[in-house]
Length: 99
Image (cartoon, rainbow, N blue to C red; front, side, top):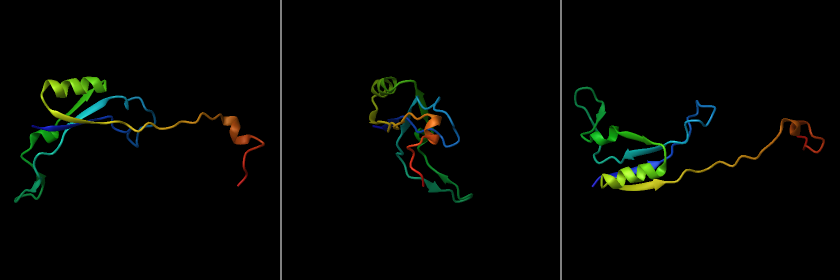
């Protein structure tokens, strides 16, 4: 039975916003080792599931898909960042520590 990983990927370093960081991704774990090609030297595998990336709007949809296809799955919860609200005026506050 194939094993899949369900997670919400972190935003790309080239993105400034967090607009597309809400989708969940289902990826298959590698079932076969990569081997170098004798002719070109490229790494390849006979495992075609490695190429699949399925996007879902919610975690529950991804889990339902995996259960519907009888796939063993593991869910990796995202690490939420802590945002402390600040205002621009705090940069010029009298109580601000001077370095």
